[in-house]
Structures are given as structure tokens and as C-alpha cells.
Length: 392
Ligand code: BGC
Image (cartoon, rainbow, N blue to C red; front, side):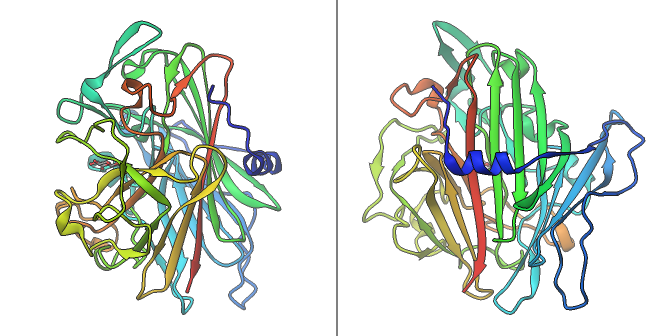
């Protein structure tokens, strides 16, 4: 049973209401529409707001919109309907200077040409499924194998590459966008038509909250996550100096294809341990290929709990991640190799960004001993991750 009724989640959803603005999917996109003006009093104090504007067009002529969320402290998140993607996230450093702290592109074009899931929502199943095969209720299913012999992040055209409907939402608790997508029965090989809703909310406590909801009409497997590559130094250098704490005492070791062996191994005394704050680069040379592992969260899977804290010493920026998910994939940007030139003309070299993807464990459809990823008709999957930003 995937129903996860949690107080905070219900509160956030309860406080939200849908505005009358919805993303236009036709070629004639509307001019920018303001749901709430972002006022500047002249003292540099902005008010909360969400503004919708056209962002470009897909090859089939569908229009992509972008929503700009701003809070009273001047934090700004921009999210587009293609992939329900976080395109930019402006955060202050300890001196109040703002910088964009996620990798990506300035325009839609880049995302269409080459994006290793920059800022996107990943689904229907985030992470890997061995050989793209699983069985459910005695039936076998075959998915695309788009990562060597394995299935990765929903397949050839996962949720990161589809056009979502976007709707601005706001009330006194925050401003946001409610993205929805209907994945048809059989899409990428998955059984069941799946209705997915992902709501991002920015509030004045400097939290970016990502809430997920899904329903199906046939038994299926679901593992939704958010795939931002963070760089709290504003993308100016690699992330090896960022100090990471993971609230996890075990991880899921993997084979050469990055499929879990099934063991939940203790991290203590190994380069996998981030139980105490440690620079990402401190022991990365001892981890073949770099970090690309799922951690078993100590407080995960039951109620919202702190999963990770990241501190960037030069800027003073801090990000804390809390989730109700049982796992988190820590990926240290190992496959970035300088061939992608992103925002501000920067070539994204190895380890230029890191991902912390809250999730159920990789290959769970083939591991009945892992927390269940099965969703059945009549159930509602509800999950949530909070990114809280501060400085020290
Ligand atoms: C995975 C990596 C993969 C990357 C794709 C991460 O979530 O763990 O193995 O290469 O996504 O950008």
C-alpha cells in the first residue's frame, strides 16, 4: 500500500489552491501573465509572486511555458512545463549576493538537444531496473534498455522529456506550480495509465517543496524524483569542496551496471560514510567512478525526516533536504565531461554539480525485500521532498 498520509504534506496541499492560469499547450502562447506581482519596495524587499510566460516551442509546435516563483527574501525559482523542470534557482550567499545554484541552460533548445536530466522530474521509475524487466502479479513486463543492458529514469522518453500541464498556485503559505501529466497505459512499457501531479512551492521560509501524487488504473511500479544538479557555489567551480552530511548509515552496493546487489551495507569506516560533514572530494578517489549510490535513510519511509545537508564553505550557502522517501541517490556528476556548455557559457566538467535524488531504492521491482514501489488502482501515492536554503 503506497498511501502515505503525512501531516505536512496534507497541510501544504490543503493550503494551496489552483488559480485560473494554466499552461497553454498550443503554439500561440499567451503573453506573460502575473498571478501576483513581484513588488520591490525600493528597499530590495520583494513580495511573493508567480509569473507565467512563454519559454519556447517543441518540434511538434507545442508551446512550453516557464513560471517564475519569487519569495519575500528575493529567492527565485524558474520552472518550465517541459519535463516539469527547475531551470534556475537563485539563492543568496552569506553576504546577500544571489547566484543561480542549479546547472542547466538559458533556453529550451539546450534541454531538447542534450540534457542529462538537468532539473527534471524523473519517472515513471527513477533510477535503474535491471535488464529493463520485472514481473508484477505473475505478469512479465519489458521496458526500454537505455543505459547499457538496463532501464534508467523511465526509458527513452521518460517524464523528463514530456510536456506537462502547468498551473500557477498561490496563497499565504507560498507560491508554486502544479504540473500534471497523464502517462498512457503501456508508455515506455509500463502497465497502467498513470496520472501524475507534481507541485513545487516556494515559501518565505526559503523552502522549495516538491510534492508528488500519482494514481493508476492497473497495478504498476512508480518511483518519482527530482533531478537537479546543484552547485551552491553558483556554478563557478566543481562541487568537490561542498561539505555533505547524509543521514544514512547504510547504502545499497551495486554491480558494474550500477544495479544493487541486494545487500544493505553499513557505511561506517568507509569512503561511503557522510554521517559527519565531509567534503565530497575528500575520499572520492577511493570510490571507483565517483559517488553514484543509493543511501538507506535512517529516518526514511515513515515520516518527513532530514536526509541530507550540504554546506558550501566559500559562499556560506546551505541546503537541507527532508523527505518521506526511504532512500536518496547521491550522484557526484561523474559523467559530466566538459562537453556540455550550460548557463553563462560555462563548460560543465566532471563533478560540476551533484544530485541528491530522494527515491525508493534502485531495481526495487526485482527486489521484493526493498520497500514497495507497487501502486494499485484505488491507491494514491503521495510523497514529498523539502529543500531548505540558508547560509552560515
Ligand atoms: C544516475 C546516474 C546517471 C545520471 C544521469 C543519475 O541519477 O544515478 O548514474 O548517469 O542520473 O544524468
